[in-house]
Image (cartoon, rainbow, N blue to C red; front, top):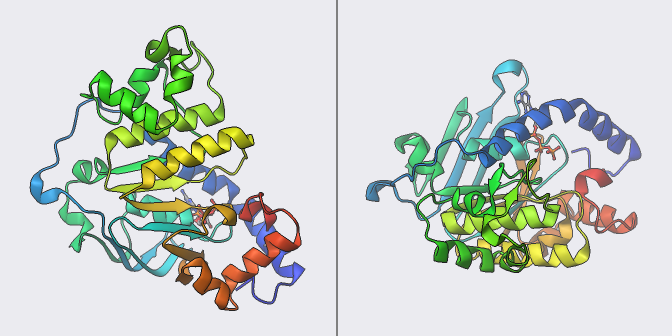
Length: 307
Ligand code: ATP
């Protein structure tokens, strides 16, 4: 791998690769981001036989994007997560982290290999019922133009006011919402109030809490919030992750130390996985990433930026 050996030539390679991939990486994020727009406001009923606990298994998955069939992105990637586990995904830019997430949300089909939910092939579930049981919180939350209530209720269109308030409380959003003259009827977006990045994230977290998904996908923000906002967001995320299978695309190693499992993705495969302690005990990529963040004194900066 480019990390092992730790030469600067390796880092330079990776940096130029990063630059090359930026355009494409943006587009996958665009797809994921479109989740934040209201597509349908009908509540989806999940049939009892399609309800999942949240066990997920990627089995030897191969994938290349339709536009770049000659360049495989996932090259036999395997990983599993048990119901309720918190799984952190780390690795260099372009390693395939977002691609893995878009497979999970079933935006794309694998070219080979299998994806299972609760031991059943992903294709055996109706797509809408599967997605109804997953929530995605992106790096940069875009709310749609409408009231805060509508933005939160998007996760559950038939939610009562009481449910919305409870979700906002758990998301550390209730206080700032209440402080607006129109409270939950405050209009946000271009024609309304501009919320701060941290406030938008907490609204998105409230939406996810209300949706009550079995599986949660978080793309950790790379741009740092101020430390007070950061703490409020982290607390809200902890409330959200409790009891759900969570996949966290992590950019800061400091936030994932307590993950049940850390998965290091590099060049389209799982390079190594384990707890923080297990991975630090090995002389591998994860330990190297930690040392790099330490050496350069940029502990709070994102891993991908450090590279
Ligand atoms: P980052 O940390 O920069 O977000 P990542 O690990 O999430 O990176 P991916 O976004 O999954 O990496 O990208 C993996 C590879 O797939 C890259 O080489 C990228 O150029 C390519 N890729 C991503 N999205 C597309 C797309 N929509 N079409 C074609 N290629 C893509």
